[in-house]
Length: 155
Image 1 (cartoon, rainbow, N blue to C red):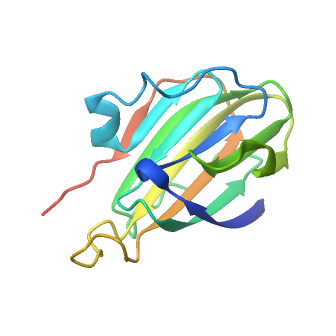
Image 2 (image 1 turned 135 degrees about the horizontal axis):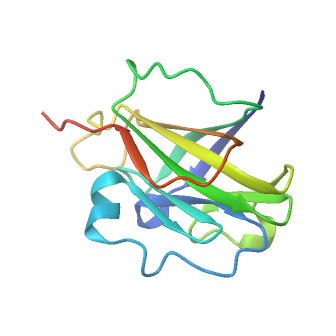
């Protein structure tokens, strides 16, 4: 497993993981269902919703196989698929300057993406500071539909 740590500007309450050559965008993907699950998808792009539109900590892990499924410490867990044709993924805030965004080389193919969300309730009153955390794990897999593995319970 290879682990990367990022501090991403989650402008518009989101950051993206995408194939470097993806031509689509998430403009029409943020439906009410996507907003509710904090996850939007388009061909070659995964949009991860956040609870703050500030810098947020993100851990990205590239795995060889599906990781274990212990969700106890997490508020929400989603999964989706991502096709990577170029052999490079880009991780960035949605308004970051794309040419300067972080790039990670991986084998071209289809990946399963599991997104973990933590401390979603731990924001201060103005909603700008908090302890929310985001963990993204990718591994090679066949294409599958979006699945909410652990729904978020607000109370």
